[in-house]
Image (cartoon, rainbow, N blue to C red; front, side, top):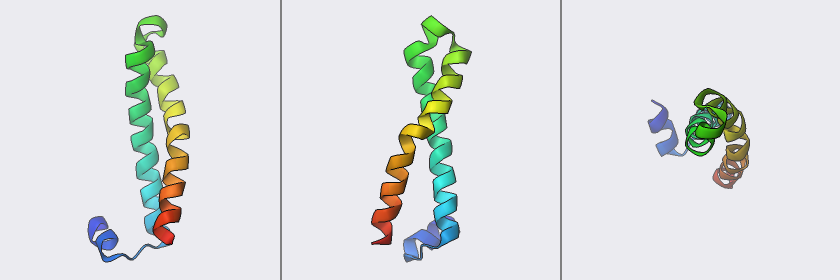
Length: 73
């Protein structure tokens, strides 16, 4: 359903919200994985994953909003 809406080119407010939420969740997952890989030995895996999942969406947010802006053009 979601892929048919995007492939038709119909971008609504709801598709932007869903896309933003999905991208932030993937950013948190990627941040947690990166945190464990980079700081797991020094900080412990759980703390490194927690910190990475907090800072991952912050790094992903500008890319999300720039991508949505380009799609609206």
